[in-house]
Length: 236
Image 1 (tube, rainbow, N blue to C red):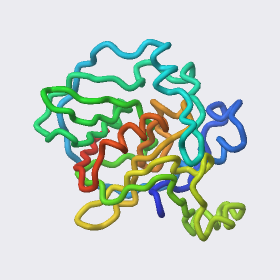
Image 2: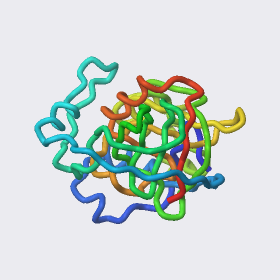
Image 3: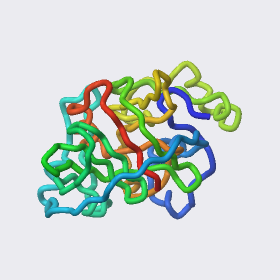
Image 4: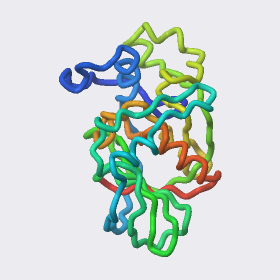
């Protein structure tokens, strides 16, 4: 089960994937894995990429964000495959400009810009067995949201019981700096698009079906996404 932000606990990640990470990041990653809820499937067309960022451009785009409530550090872009840097690409679709399309099979999130163009972001997605697909919409938005662990997680990991009333927003909060909550027919689906501070998660399946963008990318998307924005999650 997933609660308040759509990210839950679950099986441990491979030890090799966690080697060398800080305790805070290990805790954050442990929150990302859990059980998922299935949704209906839907498919759309693919895309053709244009030239992307250089490493120097990426260091600027993913540099520190000091004016935030909790200043965000720069991303270590050496830990991100350049194909996952933000870029404008060709994307043919009948969806309206502003629509968000999640492509978990390729670890991308697109914001449709119109005229056959889209902004593309690298993402982490649900791990194998926890992928879902279907239509949804942004029913709620939050900056530095509170995260509440599910009761099932508290039973398995008593150390998180101190957050039963909600973990305040901050750099160690699993939901990060921004969150888009996905709804269907007026009900929260338990899934989110959230901000990740873990560059090594981008291009990997590590969550319970939620979708994470680098914090700088998530802020970029969040500012351009009003409530009721349509979200299409493609089958993996």
